[in-house]
Image (cartoon, rainbow, N blue to C red; front, top):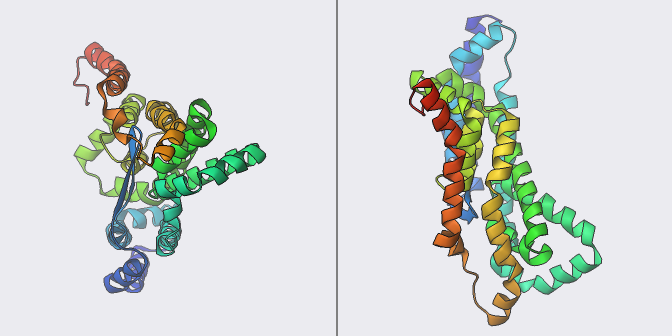
Amino acid sequence: MNRHNTIKKKEVLLSCLGERELKRITQSLFTGINFVHFGSCCIDFLPIRCISNILKGMVLMSSESEIQQVEAGQSKSVASRLVPILVIAVVVGLIIYFDLDDYLSFEALRENRQFLLEWYANNTVLMALAFCALYITVVTLSLPGATSMTLAGGFIFGTVEGTLYVVSSATIGAILIFLIARYSLADFFRSRSGPFLHKMEDGFQKNALSYLLVLRLVPLFPFWVVNLVPALLGVKTRIFAIGTFFGIIPGSAVYCSVGSGLGAVFDAGTEPDLGIILKPEILTPIIALAVLSLVPVFYKAVKSGKNPSE
């Protein structure tokens, strides 16, 4: 396949994915922005109206790099790269359109608490499996409701068991969206990144575990951002999994602990104190862990005589 034919196919593809058509499709599926905070991290629902820009941007801006890959016999089709993103977009759109996300709310937990406890007593293993599967789905799709599910984990299973299920499920979900982002967007990102981004990529990779632990422990950025950026910066899956698993343990444990005491909250007809994680006696140890995570970065910087960010 020569350069001229490849460019011609790009033009045909762009005509199929015109701006007006993309806008019509995405707007018919989604409206608004939803946000939800989860423990020491945030799980945000990405503004779906940006998807049309992402799709068209990937087609428009990856031409040169894709032509080179085609000539080397290593090209992945644009369509195949977009499939995971489109599938997620459609699924999330259907969930929101049919108001299925309402079942992930705190009110839904309050209304169904007795049923959930009884079902857990009669189907212990099945309940645990169903909870984990649902939590993985919520994180992978970045749906609102992770906070309520974390509370439900503590309410149904107790603090320790609930924390184990929440951390494991959140980690698996994060890995899935990490892999999707790396497959769909990493090549495009690298082909368009300049010297500054290449330098940032090198610096992040050298201390990836330390930086991931800090980002997971302290809610500096939304959860989905911390899932996507390491994928685009070439972080290894193993490092990402370890940093995510251990980094979200403190926040998950705090909210599962709150969830374990929801019985009294329900009886009193009040709301749980979700700001508990910001109390000094809880936030201070978490920040201390984050600082401790950066010790290897500063040690290597001092030893090499370089700036920690390099």
